[in-house]
Structure formats: C-alpha cells, structure tokens
Image (cartoon, rainbow, N blue to C red; front, side):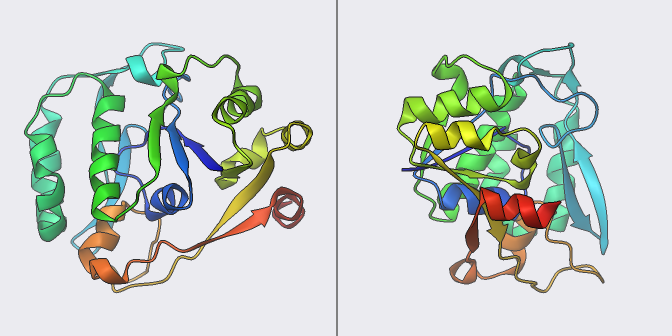
Length: 230
C-alpha cells in the first residue's frame, strides 16, 4: 500500500500529480497550519506572454489557522484568474472553467476540487482522502506516521521537503518504508524561452497531447536520498 500525503495546493505543478499517480491512497493534509507568508496553497506560477507570472487567491489569515478553516477573501480575484488562465491556456481552461463559476468559501475546498478535476482528466485513480476527516493526532513527522499507520501503509512516498523533518527510523520501526520521489521532468514545447517544469500542471496539459503525458517518477530509498541531497 503506497501512501502520499500532501497539503492541498492551488493548481499545483506536474510533480504533485506524479506523486498522486503513484499512490494507492492520496491524503490531502488539510488539518495543519497554513504556512505563513506566500505559499503554494494560495498561489501558482503560470506562463503568459512568454514569461512566468504568479496568480494569488486572497485569504483571511489568522496565525496558526488550519488549512481546512482558511477562508477566501471575497470573489473579486476570480475575474482576473479566469481571464488570465483562459488567455494563457485556452484549451485547458475548458476543463476547470465551471469550478470558477462557483463562489468558494474555503481555500482547501477550492484547491481540492480543482486537483480532483485535473487528476480525473489525467486518468489518475488513487483513492483520495482528507486528513481533517480522519482525526489523526500528532504534529510534523509524527502526524505523517500516524496517518500511515491508520491507513495500513507499507510505503510512504514523500516529496523532497520531507527530508527536512521526517523521522525515517521511526517509520522503519513501524514497518513502513520511506521512499522519495525522483521526478522524470521531460522537457516539452513551452511558451517561454527557458523550460520551467515547476509551473502549474495546466501548462503541461495545454502543450502536450493528453495521451503522451506520462508523469513518470522513480523511487529513491530514504537512505540514498539523504546521502545525495546533503
């Protein structure tokens, strides 16, 4: 049982969906605090007119507030986002335009609805869950481990950020193997002079035939990943 646990991001990059594709269960980690300052939970990079730009969803911030409780500040941002995305990714915009016609109260609900719609279009069939519905205690690495134990994980697949806080030996003692993602970021024709794989996945979907999108990824054992990332 491969499990991936990620915070719900706004129109995330292709690596997010590669992780989802390689999981049996994908958990939206929405009962942890929203990161302070600018974060990928509320903003995304796109390519428009051959340059990288950012779109941000305004939210009502409160210190320590859980992601699942963070409210969006009004509806005024939707017009800019819809017109910009439609201009930059005309074909792919059709996939998500209906979502922007709704009024959203919580950023987590918006993000997860967008992610689920995109994942479905990419034929990703992982079982999706919200950590806020599971009521699993803990913080940091302990929270991730407790979720994995609750869901019967044999392997936890982590993005690169996990190396900063995961207690790998604790996972091993609980019979859970930790592997890190080695993303296969294949360059494609992009509307910019320098290829950037870290923009929204909408860019990939717009510029690559749906049948040719691979979202490839290899797994690196945590011991090997730590040794090469130091």
